[in-house]
Image 1 (cartoon, rainbow, N blue to C red):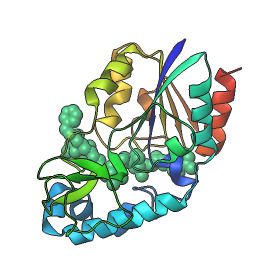
Image 2 (image 1 turned 90 degrees about the vertical axis):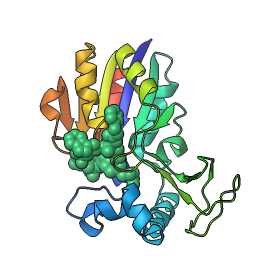
Image 3 (image 1 turned 60 degrees about the vertical axis):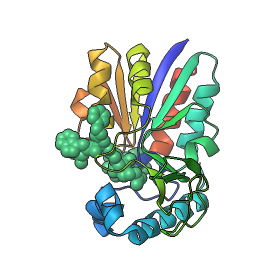
Amino acid sequence: MAKIVILTGAGISAESGIRTFRAADGLWEEHRIEDVATPEGFAADPALVHRFYNARRAAAAAAAPNAAHRALAALEADPQHQVLVVTQNVDDLHERGGSHNVIHMHGTLNGALCHACEHRWPAPAVMAPTDACPACGARATRPDIVWFGEMPYRMEDIWAALRAADLFVSIGTSGNVYPAAGFVADARHAGVPTLELNLEPSAGTRLFDEARHGPATQIVPAWVAEICR
Ligand code: BJW
């Protein structure tokens, strides 16, 4: 059984209507990263950061998985393949598309986290700085999102899966944010073949053994059909 580790980024959800970060009309055009995606930005203005993530939570809830999410779920269901999806995305479109083996390395919009006691619970649709932690009562609740300067989740599991993989595939990510941007080099170092599927060449495209460019809803189902033949 072939073991495939698949890294996904904002590009896989773009055709579901979820905005990417670094496009001309992306989220970072309207918001300063330091204000909304760092612990320092949250400490300075928690209401602003909650508004940013409340809006994104609503957008994700209104979106539906697309053909690329569904193709990865079909690949996971194929008995010839063992698939791990490592997503940088904080939406739940992989799960709603039918994938089960998913690691959210940058957290999830559907999670709330108390930064006083580290308790986690399902996020309400709208979070506010005055929300109290259900475990310790502190009014120190934040979205369960990994911001710049924080350690992404389950890195040891991800690196172990990369080392044991037969193929590493990167889908819909610009390759600008580490440690995810380093996975292609980590895979190469372990002798694992690498494939990029993206709208355009990513920052690290030259490191991949093969790269195919086009919209995820076309190139991902085509690739899955090819390897499940
Ligand atoms: C399509 C498409 C279609 C469009 N079909 N494709 C200097 C050097 C190196 C590293 C650092 C440095 N200074 C600081 C760092 C570390 C820092 C970092 O990487 N900074 C860089 C900016 C340089 N990283 C961190 O701080 C991370 N933590 C960390 O490093 O901890 C220490 C550590 C040490 C050792 C080991 C491990 C860890 C934490 C990073 C947290 C990132 N957080 C964000 C925001 C929170 C989540 C959220 O709000 O959603 O995560 S930033 C943002 O970027 C978000 C994304 O997950 C992430 C990646 O973006 P993504 O998905 O690639 O989106 P885009 O928009 O960039 O690209 C979309 C792509 O899709 C494009 O290529 C399009 O072409 C394509 N596309 N439509 C197919 N239809």
